[in-house]
Image 1: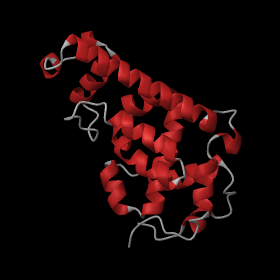
Image 2: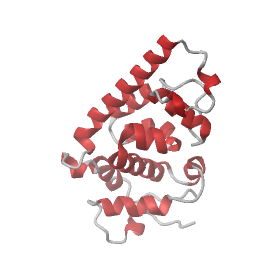
Image 3: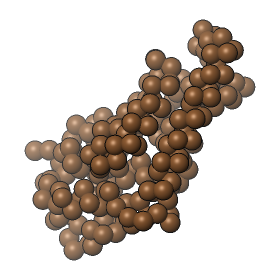
Length: 192
């Protein structure tokens, strides 16, 4: 693996752009699990990677569909990364949303079990394959869980729309990561 610093990898690319963030993120992306990426990268590089993935996914489809629906593997890491990026409120809202998921939810696998959980939370019972898993909840509990989840997603959307939206100040939402990147230019991407 490449032992270069972030500055060396950017090699003259302006750090004030999305291009710089994508270049670093692309260098980090390997065909392995997020846990493996975390184990192989420095903390700073991993924070940049998860931050870019989170904001990019949000811009592409929002919290419910894109992040929680399609990229659950990054979800457990989002709160600590948002704290690193000085986005404490986003971190708290994500933590609250995670706690609304059934206890046995495994975010590391985007498989049928996870799809069942998302369909349960979204109220799409007709798409749930393993309905028995959710029979422990009364219809009132199901309604309350779903309402809480919808409210949590709505709060997340409102919070980040003003800071990550395409018309947002701060480089259309990338500013927090760019600031973090500027402060970590001499950090290596890969652990020794």
